[in-house]
Length: 111
Image (cartoon, rainbow, N blue to C red; front, top):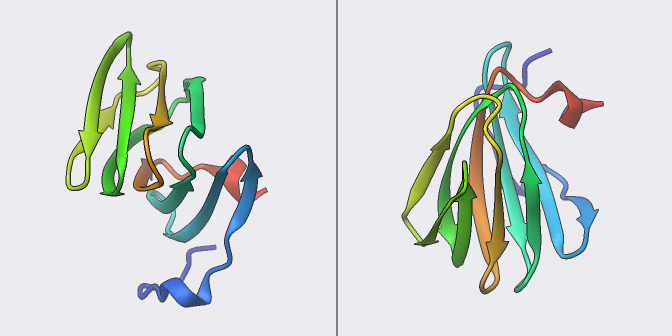
């Protein structure tokens, strides 16, 4: 079931993922999902892969982002795209927020 076409940030609850990371699912339809992820300084999005295409923009902060063995330091306004099944992860260098878009949707996030 898709969410409404309009998203009000204040109406969506955070999900605590532990270890200084939390997320909120801002919206999704049958093919795309938008997720905000907040990190404390030093928090890690561990290296992993999934069959989804993922793109993200750094809304706030600075991150070391690793994709397919390459690491770049990204700051507010920067972004990245992860192809399907490619290993990737992040380390927050300061408090920060990523806005992730996935296609297809991350059904595991909805479970």
